[in-house]
Image (cartoon, rainbow, N blue to C red):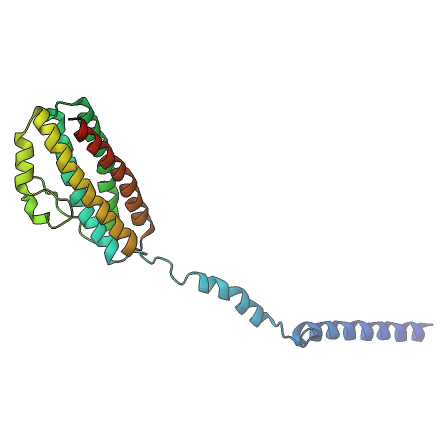
Length: 216
């Protein structure tokens, strides 16, 4: 009995070891189609998508048109704000004053937003033109000359209202032109979105101001 039990025990061990070896060979050698799935290849496959997904991480996503749009629109907006601030003390029409307040309220935050873009891109934010010769930037569409601004500052009452509306229509038309250029040539999504906003808001204000001029 003892010899028989020893024989059975050895046979069982042999079968178990053989099964384990077969399992290891199956795992390392491949599946029924002969495809290899060793641990090294599995690790490589799982790592490759992560490596590829970070290809453009940190890219700026903007181009020269975006930079030019921000630089010029900041100065353009600043002049519009200067014109709007004159309306506080010189305009006669409450409607003109209300429009001027609306223009300032919309364009001040946009100046801040565009300044933030330039800073993030490593570009210089244009200096404030307050007290400077406006002719320095008169090459931009719709920008008022120093003479235009001086005439506006001297006007008051109904004469100011008419001059303000005429100049601001021209100024807005220039801004719309600049925004359309950004939409055609720019790359930075938020800048293109802002250009869309400028076109929508200022086109509506141009229509409003032309109606006000027709009534004057």
